[in-house]
Image (tube, rainbow, N blue to C red; front, side, top):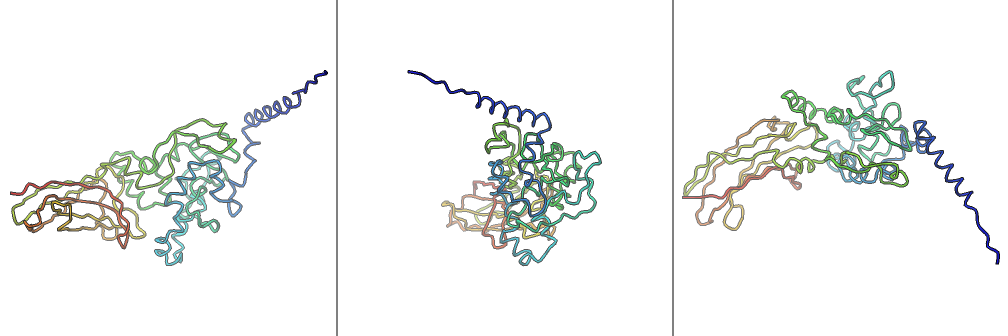
Length: 357
């Protein structure tokens, strides 16, 4: 019997060529790889949309898709607040082409700088409106590269700019009023940024899609949740609620609730547009946990009653006591709410068991 041996030389040659091409691509600045998907860094309607970014940036896309950034145009609240999108001034930040639209780039074509704005305008996007504040909104530069805090091998042009993406100025391009409040906070020697609270730290691969994830290692980064919940989870005591000067007898209880904005680097509530209310409820409860008496106070930016960074507000309360109800507890609850108060985001809560005479 005659045995034949099938040569592996063709496979070896092909594999070797792939390795050589890969090395050449890396050594030449990854230009070959960068040109595989140039449409991802194109301005205008040629950009296919953030879902294409999600093919590789799997985790980041999922976080963004669940965030308010992705719903900045489609939310019913925004549609109603702009009279069915008639207020064009609002559109530029709710569907921005890119925050770098009006920015100059350094003459040596290095890093774009938010301090070099020619004017305050951001061009609104006229395509992919349902994506809201999309990937391009924060990452596409005037040079049609995708900027971020990390370098790496990518199928589209990229640009590393560590400092820019760590600074609150990045967020301040759209969150103008909140950023002005933040500058007052910084003037007092504080240095915590928007990203520190609203983008939790993560350690992971930037790329999860194949085959690119094989070319990447885990790096320190930020979750793209942009959430008040993220801030609450990272600073559970950022607002302090305290009962003070309590005075009670068998017929009445009175005292104060002190609210201290001890750690938030902007006002509560913050922002100029849309309905923004923070509501304080002081509740008197019976032995069964039922609310028998309640008092409420509201804070609005428009009324200039918002809680500023480092500020303390004191609200008094007074309840008549019906001994038959078996009064037991005092409770103060602070939360952000919407116009019809169907949504509530808990900001702080304190309870006190009463010791009545």
